[in-house]
Image (cartoon, rainbow, N blue to C red; front, side, top):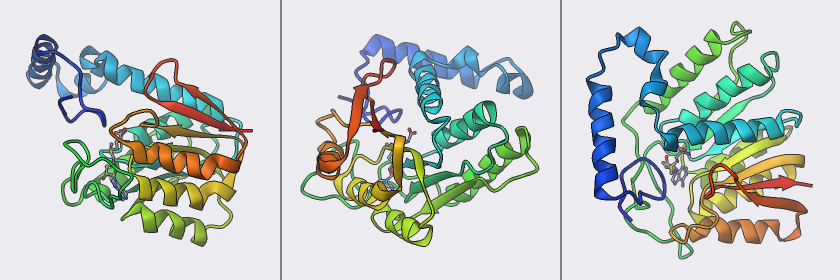
Length: 254
Ligand SMILES: C[S@@+](CC[C@H](N)C(=O)[O-])C[C@H]1O[C@@H](n2cnc3c(N)ncnc32)[C@H](O)[C@@H]1O
């Protein structure tokens, strides 16, 4: 499977599809729309593989709307999901300023492999790294979205926590023992950070909490499933494959 930089599983597209994607990228780069019109007409260039991510997150948000607690993404990369979550929060619960959104990432790509992981093209030291200063850029971007949304004068609903999740997630839960988790999106894929995060947030889960796993059934990232099976051995939950996005699994605490 080739890695085209768009997803954690690479691409199964054939040459012709890749050519069409390249043509779309060229048409986007050469768009005749003025920038302010382009921002409001991005659907012109949104492929189904991106649209489904929006629809999927919307499905997840609807499930946790009545569940108290924070929203977490473990493995942020460029942070699109965090921006979507902020905007879904603004749509579904504009006055809920206690819905804190947390993103954990090294911002310098993959780190901390173990025997449970498959290191390859997609997952290797430093893949998915972002340019220097990207966390600060994403912080400003989230603040701008929050400020532009309803009730925007009350800001401060996001935290980006930089570093190896093996250390940062347990530390966060130690320092914030009051935290409940409404939703956590696991998208690191490797064993140790997934395990550390699951262990750290286990006691913060409540009935209705939703955990999304990006790669639970992908043989390229067995560490995620291994960690899940170990931690969830004694937890009562339901699990389903997303109807919209078959590679994603949705776990709901009973
Ligand atoms: C597949 S990408 C996440 C994609 C993102 N969730 C999305 O949907 O666009 C995986 C991310 O995990 C991060 N990562 C890998 N190992 C990590 C670790 N030990 N601690 C924190 N972040 C890590 C990488 O930097 C990368 O941004």
